[in-house]
Every structure is written in structure tokens, then in C-alpha cells.
Image (tube, rainbow, N blue to C red; front, side):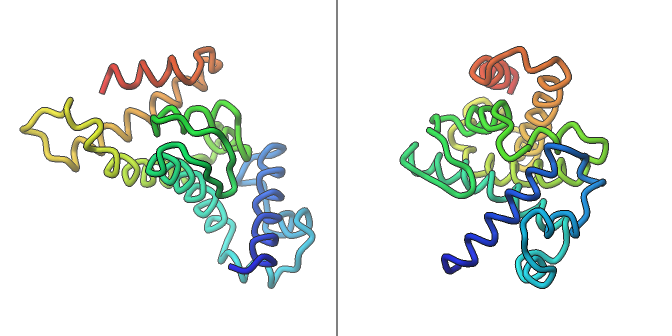
Length: 183
């Protein structure tokens, strides 16, 4: 992407996330996104086929960011998220959730969160597959890797739900320790 395309994409992400901070995902229209981003309808559709594709790309940016930071060993990284990455991918995700980066918590708590949770779990599985050597020592030998990855991703999603429902009282480090203890 050239600089102009990146700037437009960033404007669309910013507008979408700003809207997410004010209303539920299902109440946001493409018209509102393009008005907030100050772009034309054709420009929006040149970048994203639908609002759902925009959501998918937002999720992928988050997971690419976390994965790239983990692979790079915490070196400087940037997608649409910026931070000092910890060594644990799970802790990294929890820190972004705690900071509510890009209004991501609004997607987890909104009434219509199933689409986000589907992308979240799919991306988690990919991330876990790359992290498997780091967490595989706990896996019983008789379990297939695909079952283990599914179990870990489902447990992480439910850990995050529990955390949010209980007011996010634990810091990301504590929650990450809880999670690693149970898997």
C-alpha cells in the first residue's frame, strides 16, 4: 500500500473505532463510517467489501500485531496498534484489551458480538499454533494438537469474558498467570 492508501485505511479504522466507542456494532452503518472518516463511499468499498470485512481486518491487525511482536522478540513493531510488547502473546492481548485499544472491548461486550468472537477465536487458533512449542509441554500426548489448540483458544475467550464480566479487577499479568495455570 502506498502512503495515501495507508492514511485512508487508518482514517477508516479510526472512524470505525470511534463509532464503536459510542454504539454497538450492529447499530453502526457504512454511511456513518464514511461520514466520520470523511471519505467517499467508493473509497470505503475500495478498501473493504462490507462492515463485517472491516471488523475482520481490525481483528487481523490486532493479531498480526501481537504475532509480529512475539516473533520479533518484543522489538519495535506497529500495525494500527503501538505498544511495548511483552514476551507472552496472551499477556500482550490482555494488555490491549485492558487499554481498550481501538474500542476492542466494545466488540466483546456488545449484544451482537458473535462475529467478533468468531474472528477472535480463529485468530487465536492461528496464534496458538505458532506458540504451540512454548505451551506444548503441558499437553497430554494422547490429545491431538487440533483439540489442544481449540481447548486453549476457547479457554482464553472464556477467561476474557469472565474478566470483563467481573469488572476487569485483575491486572493483565495476574489474569495471564491464571490462564497459564489452567491450561
